[in-house]
Image (cartoon, rainbow, N blue to C red):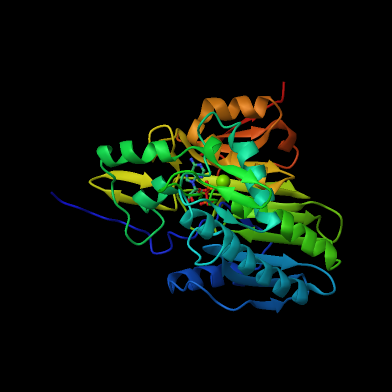
Length: 368
Ligand code: ADP
Ligand code: MG
């Protein structure tokens, strides 16, 4: 049997949204950086008079910032340090972080963690309870078995899935004070579907603390716009072309004081025997999600909420996503047939990139 494993060299990097206004040099640097396959780099940046640009590698992805005004360089470094602390605390792969210790203590009585961890877990559990079973922070047994974002992905046999699926159960997580318990051995928490959005709240607090009132940060393509551009107008962002590289976008839109989190099946996946296995798992089947959505970006002032919905709506599919938009949720969705469904509230600023008009259709979805 021919086994073909195809993994993009930059498969750990997802850029769902791009900074259109970022200097070309920054975008070029991103490509050079990823093609070298480096996993970490010290913060780097250059002031170009139009905002200070910095990049680093954190939370298993590329992080870029563009910060305006006095103190930008210090702020960039402080944010990079904060992201490293956050990664250690919330990654299931770090040795001594809170999530790693909770997972190691599954079935063994649980672990004491930082109050910030319990707060994030409570927030994530409250959100996942609204997902209709599409989102689960206890997805770790399945994400680990498939290993899609690791160097050793594999197709998990049905019998093994049947044994793992009962371990995915958010309602079994108990939090008492600062003590978190997973009742059964083999259970585990994976915050990959929410952590990059959630950290945007910390980023916001830190920018505020350092008197930064205008900045953009991209964490693996999830973008937080802190305030507006220095002239008071919203930032212009690009919605990425799933078929293109990290710098190509198909449409632009304006955003201020909000996070856009993007989920898609086009960056982190592996292929075997002609089937593509993506990194978002449907807890209801135990298998990589098979969505009728190419890419979904959810805009929300709360980053955790945006990130939660992007993953959840990708799993639930186009019908439920349009229902979310009709109920007032703000989103940009690309289906498999080059139709972009865009919340009507974005209509004033949303525009296809020149030259894309013959390829893509736009349908605006009004809240009802
Ligand atoms: P990305 O992290 O690539 O920006 P997402 O926000 O959609 O994209 O998160 C995908 C990640 O979430 C996976 O890599 C995995 O860690 C985790 N995950 C996968 N499936 C689920 C799910 N059904 N519910 C919650 N988290 C999930
Ligand atoms: Mg998400």
